[in-house]
Length: 238
Image (cartoon, rainbow, N blue to C red; front, top):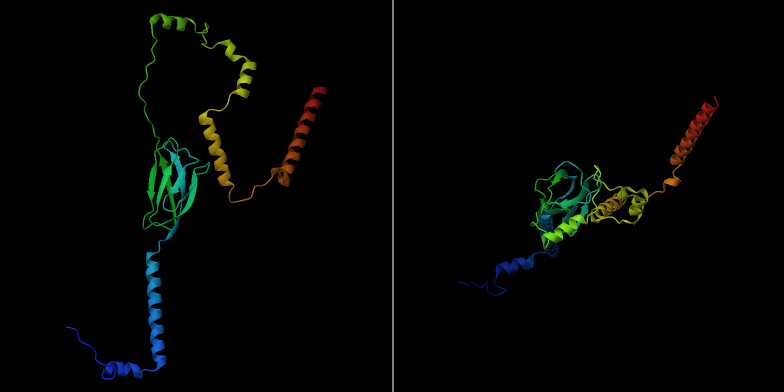
């Protein structure tokens, strides 16, 4: 059943509200607004997640340091990579998921626990990702062609099993100058350069030729070498 309050004049509640001073009404509104503001701040503080600093080292199964390992946080869209000594460090929020990946190793996932400390240190061990391909059998069309191919090989006849032509100094020097790096060497070179650039990211680069300590060491080495040469020359005449 719905009860109506009646007219404005006959309702005692509205009469009392009308008799309240304006200052009291303003104070009540201010206290109510302040209460809502404090409640909202407490609720947002409870929902706010803590920030931690996750640091550590990445190794393989043998204990060797792994440079260039990628650490990526999908929700935040940011990450970092490990340095030459396998060290990494990045800020995270409680509950974040970190994807850890590197070429030739299995991908790992790390979730920041709720009770993580402000500065958390971990060690990740990456397992190699080995893929076995199907066996490939290479056969010759006929036995006669197989014999001709074997007889046409330039097999060394001495006991060393190495052809002397392949040990020619000029040929080896030419191969060193003209043979490009393979995929593995290019990857290692890129990772080393990238790790060095990440390590030098937070401090300015300096020119070693402008370091007075290096010049002092260089002059000292020159004097030492000159004294050794003078001693050798004196020994010859003695």
